[in-house]
Length: 266
Ligand code: 2AM
Ligand code: CA
Image 1 (spheres, rainbow, N blue to C red):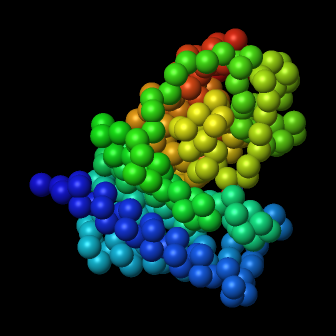
Image 2 (image 1 turned 120 degrees about the vertical axis):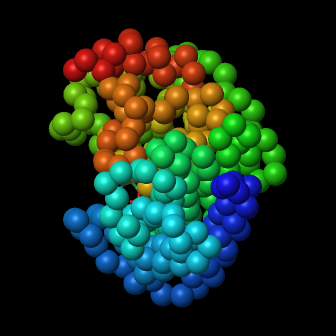
């Protein structure tokens, strides 16, 4: 029998400990490298924190599988069994340039179904966490369920990559939506943008390209509150490959998909 309560408790404890480590790194010199391109950044802290999680998980749950952004986990081709999906620092560019607006993101999935979502805003000491079916919390406080809203009253989080040539969306589709919304915001951290949807600080979040570790935890938290998360065609995410992402309050998701995104038929 899986003891999910203790998995949840351990996961939260490890995330908080990882946050302490990140906080105490602020007065040390960061080692910054680039990955796929000059703007794709990674630091020694991204790597150290991922390795910290892997050591903890392997020690207590040696059978479980781990998918991590920095590649120290397993190379997965399926989500069979228990899979921990980790982004040690989501918003690395913000971490480097701003020392804020970044988060730790940790999701635990069982046979592809989200069970645990934890997102830690280290600088504000705000821990967002959900266990599927048992509610979502900001620190100790329950987060209220999401209510329906209209496009005209919405703030949509999205970054400016939608204006560029993009094989995942025709930017001509996005213009009427951006025009109709009350406002747009861009924070540069998918994990926090997703908890902003969960807490109603924004009403929707759209990204042209994310990886599973960017959204695995956020999906559990948003869905627990009645929000909807798909790709920009309205399809289910597969948690194994890169995809676009479209998260929104109930009602708003259907409206945007139907009235602005042609029900995904583009
Ligand atoms: P990261 O900081 O962990 O890389 C920025 O808009 C958001 O998109 C961040 O959550 C960032 O995560 C993610 N991101 C940045 N570059 C990306 C890429 N090439 N592919 C997928 N996600 C990316
Ligand atoms: Ca990252």
